[in-house]
Amino acid sequence: MVEQHEWWVETRGRGFTDLTADVQARVRQGRLVTGLCNLFLAHTSASLILCENADPTVRLDLERWFSEAVPDGDPRFRHRDEGPDDMPAHLRSILTTNSLSLPVSGGNLALGTWQGVYLWEHRTRPHRRHLLLTLLGE
Amino acid sequence: MVEQHEWWVETRGRGFTDLTADVQARVRQGRLVTGLCNLFLAHTSASLILCENADPTVRLDLERWFSEAVPDGDPRFRHRDEGPDDMPAHLRSILTTNSLSLPVSGGNLALGTWQGVYLWEHRTRPHRRHLLLTLLGE
Amino acid sequence: MVEQHEWWVETRGRGFTDLTADVQARVRQGRLVTGLCNLFLAHTSASLILCENADPTVRLDLERWFSEAVPDGDPRFRHRDEGPDDMPAHLRSILTTNSLSLPVSGGNLALGTWQGVYLWEHRTRPHRRHLLLTLLGE
Image (tube, rainbow over all chains, first blue to last red; front, side, top):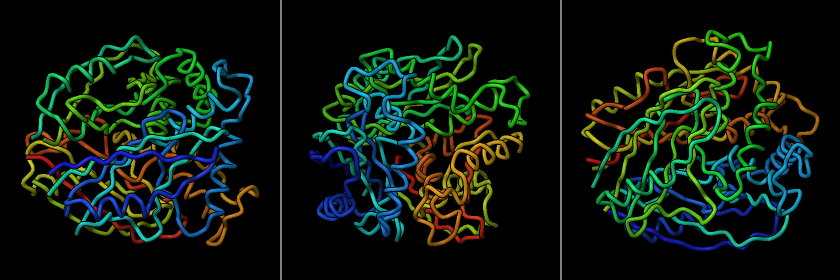
């Protein structure tokens, strides 16, 4: 069987939105028992990540590391049509991912205890982000 | 249903080859209506990326950032059998990806408006790169 | 058809475990002829990578680059509950991946000649790591 669900998430600018409960609920409501769940983000300036879900400091440290490794307003970047966070957003997105394939077992997302699914907004201003979930299997 | 297509791309050395139209055409010619399209690159010194497709400067900035983060000929690298770009190519490939899973809806690749699929050659000399497309779903 | 296999790998602390033969054997013993093999690691402080499989120096150089790009004990990191390698392990995991989707053709993993599948332990102490393999196709 195959099933697709699409929805939109409003971000509040750079930062993380926990999608775990939402994705888990969509998997549980669907008919898939065993197979794969692919979550796809249709943008090039935000990411999907699997991240530690217990201590919010992990996400703060993650943001800090990326903001120094790929600095906003870096004079080396020529693509700056939409501001100093434009090119860094594309780079952060390529250094992480926009497509997560996660196993489904017994009708549930088979994540590890400490794994959460997060949408990481890289633009400093709020954006509306399009998500597409594909469930494949039995 | 499952379908696989394989083909080869000749790169002109370090740089980007836009595969979007090619992958989209293969998806449209196939029988898949709803499901996943996995594109796999059978090499460890080139990548597949989803990148902004409107402004070529994005790819130039991307190349610039990576060439400084993972410099050719870095004396820290001991693996240099095939030249100063050998180990950097492996590292760039691991920092990005070799396997892209993309949703298919209504018989089309369901990419965002600004998302393009690119093969990123990391070796300075031209190479022949093997691609394998797997279509899964209904 | 869908099939899932789970198993555990004992790591010896930071370093690489070659999973290629193990994953290949599980694919060959399964019923899948054509489709996708998803390998999922249920942790946020270790990774799965596709890496050059001929010269072990590649993995040493890889470790060296990451240990300098994301240094253990970096005073910028506030998340250090489990020691100086705690936050770097999460960051390394996000810069690489925990989910690999690989094509299967003719009942075999369709990897390139020089591609190996590795579990990369990022914690300095040994850990028991949970792997889940999903086979999807015909």
